[in-house]
Length: 276
Image (cartoon, rainbow, N blue to C red; front, side, top):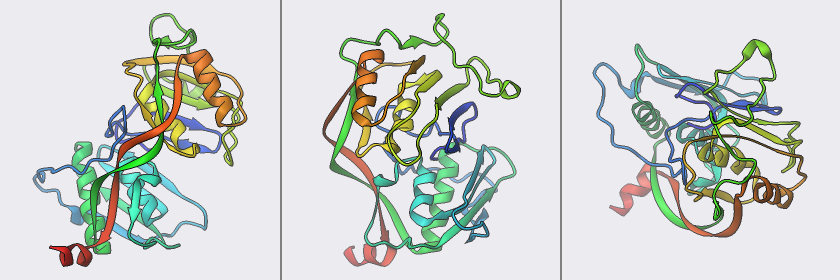
């Protein structure tokens, strides 16, 4: 569920806002997956409430934990991206059904549930509310692929092995040693530029998802580097400068190519029935 975790302890700090990421997606390709989940006793998708937003214009908020999922001020397409924790470019509407209408979605549960269960409940509620189906489909797309042909670079330190650690920006909110933190330093919200990126206990899969929204293509992690790392890279002003830093300091090569990518197709339910 995009950039606001069900799983605790994963943080993404941005000057442009604060968001987290869920562990529900694959750490390599972050492919959206529609799961078949057994209903838990006493819990149903009827507990999801979807209403026109009461947020001020251009305001959004999201709060996710094991027993609740609350998003406010999002359009339909962005809500689906949040539920699946995927880039919005992985969602294909047959037409622009989302429009400018913004919604609030609230799910509160009597106990914590698995991420899969919560995702399925939200998906079912969205399908029923808006009369649509959400289906995964594989498509060839232009992407960037991350590889590490020579292993970790000099500045990519295994977390807990004596490497550098990210200093908390606020001592009152000092993260634990194992809390995943990826921080943009002076990030420009309107383009691919930043005063640098620092990470503590960051996985390459999480780093990939952190970078992807700002790039002109989806980003796929094929580095094969497991575990968590501490690292820091300097200032960059565009994609090419960023990619050069990744290569020179982290040993990561970014290659433009094509891959089969799973996207979510969103269609009116009656359109699907007509094809059956």
